[in-house]
Length: 289
Image (cartoon, rainbow, N blue to C red; front, side, top):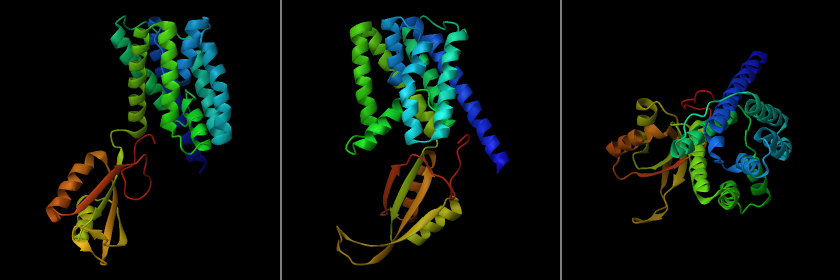
């Protein structure tokens, strides 16, 4: 058990360290020379750095400190320690490590700066830490107000940040910065959820046994069989017992599953929706998770 813990800590440390250098490259190698900013707490730090002429390496830990404390209270000590290490490491990286100014092209700067920052944030999150406290703040607000979602809070924060950037830095820089944030957020999503984002599939069919056998024997996927009862539909009111199949597959396997279901029962009722994560059972495990 102790060995597993050590391996886990080593893996987290490697991911967080890689995230620090990736974010450092995105900031110093791309964005800072063009005065672009990102969204979230990092964007606030960059905006204040441009306005107040205070080094970004000083502002990032100061502005993130309250969010680390929130994370400690809401998530736990391990998260706070890892996040402190990550944010401190990023500040040291920005202060002492030289990154070349990769390109003067504004569009390339915006896109690739966002990519490397997003990769850094995503890698750090895979290691159990954050380089940006935005998600912690949004989670806290959404927990206190059930009608507000985490995404709504993040969106509202970024609208305010980019509107302020347009006023102080200019509309062009604000628009390029929005592109930077969009690229970064998509990169984070890819690293967290991956190309194999899981999809839950519900199947209602009179041929449920044949479909169940196909899923387990042909696709080698797990399936849960739920006892159910037919309700009211185009065939009228029915009080007939039936089975509902529930399975989780990767996004790449959804099309194959639907085609196989159609071969058995073209009239089958199939509903699918994305899920954030799946563990255990017969599900392909993601690497580095």
